[in-house]
Image 1 (tube, rainbow, N blue to C red):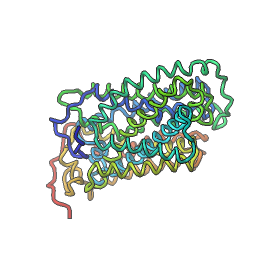
Image 2 (tube, helix red, strand yellow):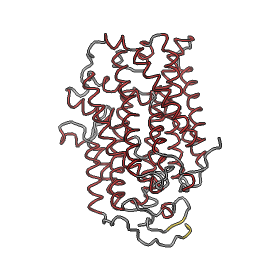
Image 3 (cartoon, rainbow, N blue to C red):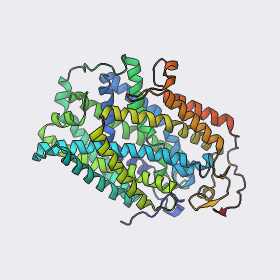
Image 4 (cartoon, rainbow, N blue to C red):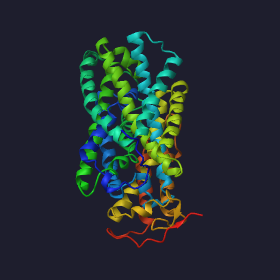
Length: 473
């Protein structure tokens, strides 16, 4: 299979051969991995019981899908990735906001997937063949997973799609078998006696809904376009693509997350997940668990790394997608080592997802408002101005930036960061919300409202005549 040559340029209609079923397969297969499963452990680590964990994860995921899924329709119309598409609203240079947000989201989730997958691999190999569990073993396993992930990401979309289709079936079987493997421990597990992380039930439940539930769909706010740019709007309607996105996200996120809650309770893993998961596994399930840790991690991290390569390619137009992917692979691997040797899993995960959700939500809301206003009508050539090192076009605005859209995002993100509550940082606006983290709600409302008020409304189906494109100086 040849290496994909496309970066963030416009995909020709002849190459847009994927369909809604492929979209479901890639969202399902790539998410059935320990990097997503571990989010089901978070509510248990916060002190919630089975009912509190399940309801918070389900509520947060459904809310996140409702906000995130429509973003898939943007790239369906533009035939390029979402950060580049956002140039229609932020300007062809202002779209770098989306590239940076996407790069940070993918970087964190790639590192997390390799981290938890590597820890489970080391634990299972220790039980199977007596592998030492020291720093050298972890370093070797992390490096191996990162190398396999980089190869998959460099080959690109077609290989990742094939891998996701295989994982959708294989990982579903492995998780179903896992329900049987941990059934005895789950039935005899006592009610967790871990105190509520925020002191009482409802604030902790809301934290779980955001950190464990909402964060899953939000991780895809810049990724969905990587897949739908290969879907033809001529052959597939927007309604079918939206339904496929919703189905893929809901099933692809809830199945592994709820499996994580189930196994965390069964393994009594309130303080840690990987270690108790391996320790509680019956001997006959160790090999399936090892396969899940390796193949699942490569599939999920591969897609995240692929997206990171596209985002870096968008930031540095002179870089090829393959070279950009290798660079971000090295950075992600460094974050894995930092996370394992210098951080607490619960603290790192919670802080990361809350901070990035606060920053990413207003960008997503502004992009959706802009898409609704223009009725899905774009000028694909004008979106590529920055990539071609030219200037001009209908999305040039002020030196390539839309100042009001960028300011709306910045103020929304600042509001979110000022109202976030993490183990490492608490924003000054928490006093106004009774200590409850409402950062994603406030950031989305403030950013979206400012954009709606400050920018003119363009009637759907209209495109202003493009300005002449000239080479950049």
